[in-house]
Image (cartoon, rainbow, N blue to C red; front, side, top):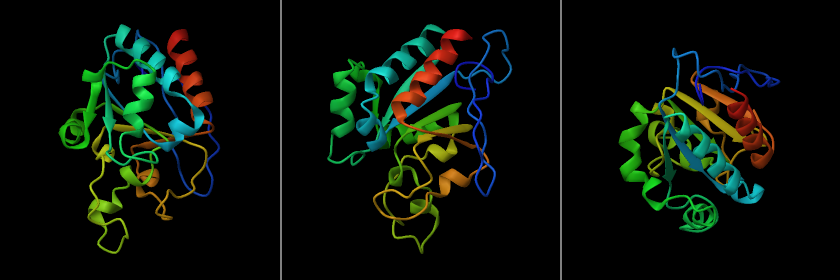
Length: 192
């Protein structure tokens, strides 16, 4: 549901169910994504995928999709890390939304595209009093209709705990290098 409907990129599910990543035909209005929020994290920085993400966002906007970027204040390795990377790619500053401004948008978001962000998207911080993350403000991406997580593996983030988001019914995982994964999504949108 990233661009319009669904083009499944095959994903090998490990021990439990994952969804597939979706992009598709502009002729299928049902399930079309009108609002996409891109959530950059350390994986975006490591892969140097910021220019590819900008290209994907531009393609989606040309199709009438409203694209925003959700910035967690500590995503990456230092405060402001994601802002700097996105500025490098000339992402328009008005498209960058701080956590407190973007969180109310997630329930109205068709697709949250999480690129290498882990602990800052973990619902356990909001829901599990036993979690070491409990009480930490997070980006509420799990409240989006669909979540697509681009990540190399299921490995935990800096906090060393599993991310409950990865196991949610509305979450699909696309494993691999963030740059290569975004390039696949760009190609699929161009082909649609």
